[in-house]
Image (cartoon, rainbow, N blue to C red; front, side, top):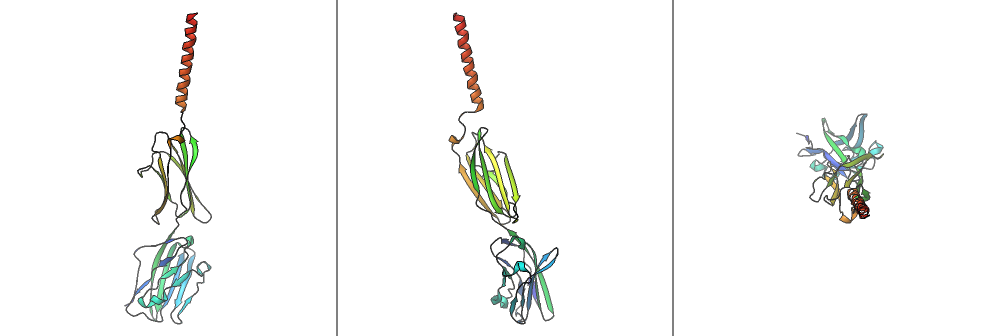
Length: 247
């Protein structure tokens, strides 16, 4: 009895790295003349990815240019039923549904393998952009992510900050995302600030942290300036009245 064991979850690949799409044939004795064919299912039709012809023992080159030079089999492990596809390097366009088809003599079976592709972006760049109102303006940027990442500002205890942030996410022609976010840190608030960017598909993140000295904040607020001006005017007016009374 021959059987292909289906994978229990999608394969997650990283752009620029390698991925192994599993196709395990469960059988005691592997026929020497088996044939393996991997295809990629697109809405426009099926794309040939790689094939192995057991009749002549050759790994056949893909008919699709997008996969040429990027696929391989583990032929030394065919005797253990390992008909998995080795894909390297992974491209963003590789994401989707693949089919592993196995045949020999009059027997045929196939299994579907889903490949999800993600990309981890650059290290987070956190910068101080000067004064904003009575606080300090900060901005955070990172690029090269897929899918679009989540970005959050954190305090010294790792909790989401309450300050309002403005975040913009854009997609480059390559398909990768760039995220830019900014916020203003007010006086008297927690001065340890972190910017964290997370890719939930890859379960990875990048984070940058800064501790802002109180010296960065404006020393005199408009309210304090207005109060000092009023006190000065009151003192001047009092002096003028005193002078008039003496006369």
